[in-house]
Length: 372
Image (cartoon, rainbow, N blue to C red):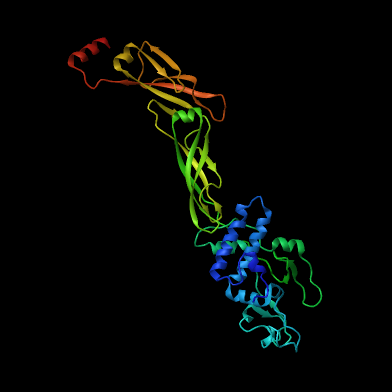
């Protein structure tokens, strides 16, 4: 029968639980109370720490054996044997050097300097690890991690540090997450370093009409998550991606924390705007360019065309000629919306391409020489 069940209760398991059951219970509790999933519940961070502290003791068979026989108070305050002469039935320290049970001495350090004789005092030489390190190490095979937290005992140390007096010397006294008083030198846990969250980029092909008018695109994505049991699952999520009128190719639209769950949190997803080819128009910055092909005869003698802009307006163009190859006309305010200047648009540019004949007969060449 165990001396107390506080740590078992913390993980919601029986004192008879196997090591595998203890690990499974910790993983479930740590995921349940992880601060990443409980941003609006400050109490969850404290529960997360308590789960880590409980698992650090119960997850180690030797430490668990000490806890089962002597309780958490014995661990936190150090192994203190009873007065001389108290050995016998009911004394768990009877028959051991210095009052420390055989096999447990590796967890304690003799602070009396006397080699472990009767009446010697031992201080527990075990520092609780950062709960985030415990979390990462336990889930290392699965690849899940946690956000960077404050050092495990730093907050408590700031609020309750005091100078010890009397026998036992100086030191810092602070309270752990179980409310137990503890004293010792150098009880500072190292700050853990958490990898930065990965950013995943995905192309977002859009038509020129979408970029002209603006649109909200619904994008279905798959993301990998961990359930409360620590298993990897895949879920579907639909994102609404807002496209502002006039947005240019290469523009990036970021969604924070919507991607796969990984060490450090959840991935950010960035959509990169791509422009689909258009059968009639090309884009040049904020301008829209439309090319008109002319036969050499038209270019020399004149021509007429009706051209429709991207927003459905008709331009009637009538030129008497000649029209120079590569020349163009510009129509202000009929191009792309300027995203940073609402209400303003670029130009609609009509560019002229002259098609020259592939061959001429001798008679045609002679006639052209006479005309030109």
